[in-house]
Image (cartoon, rainbow, N blue to C red; front, side, top):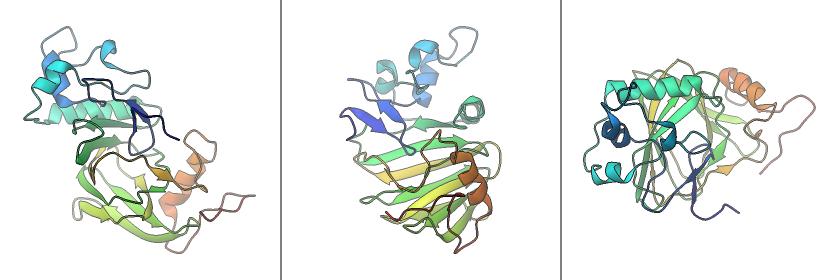
Length: 227
């Protein structure tokens, strides 16, 4: 059971929704701090939760009617992703878990592990901003049903309700906009997929990078369970 009051974003990371604040780093929060201190727009450690997620301040919420995400903010996001153990970083654009349109920017680096999951009551729209990635649609036992390349020639894909999927990042500094209908619902992970941090996560990414349609994920010595 997921603890009430927390948001589990696209990869299951727990993010606090404190009263009067929205979880996730926002461009408005960066703007509120521009010109302060030696970092010229970088947030201070006080703006971070324990897991590195940045919080929206009250002043940011008050100025959140228009949010312009510029090249500098995208660059900051990609640098954060490069330095993060999980190889990705998020910029939340919605106001909270009850927002009827859940939307965020995701910066990801090659090697990041997106645990296969589905959304039993939501579709998902992904819009590429830079880089390249593959979206794999998987069967219940981990078999590859389809593989769609997001790049400059095909920058958008919509994943239907209940489709098991994962993402393989091919280029450094890949940035994707993710949109789902709200309210927020936690990811539903495939039982056969390694948990994040598990020793089999990296082998899964290696397999998914090369897997062809019809091939099934089955680590040596194990069988992929049907969920």
